[in-house]
Image (cartoon, rainbow, N blue to C red; front, side, top):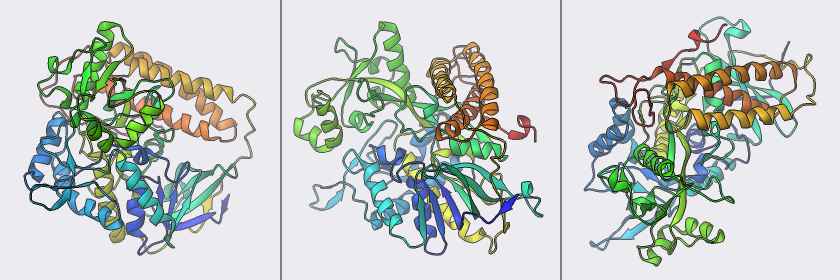
Length: 539
């Protein structure tokens, strides 16, 4: 059964963070753009990003240095061409943000001139992080949201999930296989609708919600990765899940991140007895890359049998701390912790998905007309470990490059005048939604226990068996009952969990964020881990 689409546009953007909105604003000068936002338009990882954006703005710094730092942090798995492409295009993409009104912090230097205040974070050899105090993501997101909401060619649908992509071959259309739109779940009306588009851009962020403890907001459930996989796209390097070393350990703020800029400005990591431990693990101490710092914290917690370590910047002047980290200072103060006086309890937590949907330097995937940008994608930038503040940069650069490519390649006519309507004739309302909650908690718990900071073949195989049983149960549930937001997210998270575990089992070495007890040494000639749907999905 076909029907006239509920919505139609030139470009459908799934996701409303820095990647999706920057691309939408660039394209809206010429095209009609629809943006899907799972919750309120500003709710996403971009809004909560504290640190900043890495770009060369200092004469003492260089693009080549940015490239080399990124390659080192990526532990031998970065694609040099991709890193060079992103670092070389960093400044003009950040300048585009500045021209849009994003206000980065400035300072008066010895020459009497005003310059951007650049901070330094783990893995960087220079100060190259532009920031807006300790709430850079909020400044970027609110600026982009404000302009997108007021743009006549941008329509934003809040509380709306993409369910799956609609492909031309499934409709029996001639020509190359391409995306022609998507089914979308309207949570306000609680019904599935259709959106026709000449191109679709996945900008859905990562999948850290697959873990029990994460710094990410609830929307980070791997939706874009799962949809692209079901559509036939390859994925790569999903075994590299970054655990941010310093998430606040407090019962009232379980996912509050303590930015890496704290360590960039001199904060020390300490044991409960007040002694520092990072110099024992790496000569760069607190400024070592995140994988090293996270494993060191995990090691000390397990060795001492304690629940957390401590982050201490109280040796810096109080005015300096309050001036550079006002949002963190106020948040902690409300919880009874004083950043200027106290050592703050911290634990590692799942933070960033370094792999994703394979995309070229223009964001193109394996399906014509389908693009993937930002954290949902694998571009070769991050390798085995993401360097701090390269993430917002990646969003901006690929928002620019994909928009350029879409303008060159967008079809002049719609491939499908009609789209298949969603068929609910054979489903019922579920009276056992508790099943979803049970499966949800089980998945996140065993992913944390078996596929966390330290792994083994035995743990991974155990996790995979549990995942396949869950997938069977969820697929049966999906086929017989009406949709809900939790069911959609659980279906996607379970699919991505399987891809993470299969990727981890395929890498017989320890490298970057992937540490295997069975294979503690790095292999001599590492390659990206690439999974293809043709090997796993029966069509």
